[in-house]
Length: 367
Image (cartoon, rainbow, N blue to C red; front, side, top):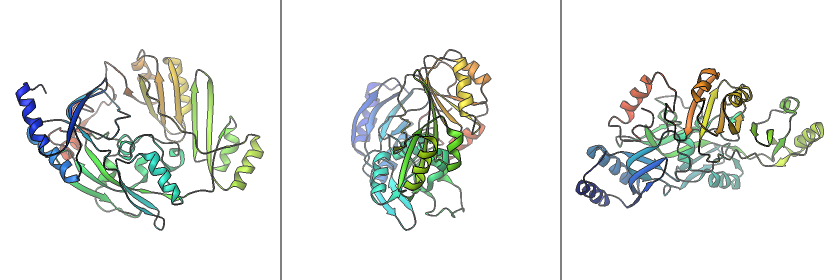
């Protein structure tokens, strides 16, 4: 929305009486006029309600590292990285509860110091991990980040704070709003806190770069990541367990494992597309994509159906969509066509009406 200067200054002045503000942002993928930095959930709620009343738009972010989808231009950027308290780590019931502004890498290490294992790793915030639902190095075995959520506190696009889920996996009553928001990129609502399932930390985490995947798969790896770039093809296979078992694997394949896991490293290339296919077809679809488009680097997280392609241009993208066995999404880049490739958006419209009836959060992102 374009405002006369005097009206722009008016609502910014009003907003400054509600919450701390700072300068906006202007880059290729995300733009907003003013940044607000709420210190409490109540301040955040007041900002969202103010935006609803004034018909202003909001972009929620913590570090703004992994914007997915078309470029977005909003009125207000809502910073969330200050909500970074780890509320509880339970080594008895195996869960962690944290605010969403904490970095996932920091949370991983904090939980590790308590002898526990969070099967997720990401270079951004916890809120970003849950909002994007991007698979992590452990998703082949433990599933997507959404699968780890036991409970969450959220705020909707019209400023309603709600909680869903429970601290145990047996929880099943009510609507799973804590799951619905995951993967929706902040378009329906904003995560405030999340309770995630954790596990005892293993004696060893080891990764093997090998082409003998079939041979060592009998040992039940937790991660198989296929990678291809100008240097060639590589497969990274990660195991957790006891040192004795790792020694047996090393002996069988003749390769010494490296301590730790293979970090996917979601490097920010100018143009990124992802393929969402049937689990187990990741390598096949990457090879098919390479025959259609110029792919600079690709990774496939085996067992998740997710393939990420860094491409030289969007030439032949629609050909890829026709030929591929799966769904193709433009995650990043200045693409002139449809970023999502979704034909029927009826369910999305109904969800938006329920969670964000005034289209306050990220208008134009998905619809």
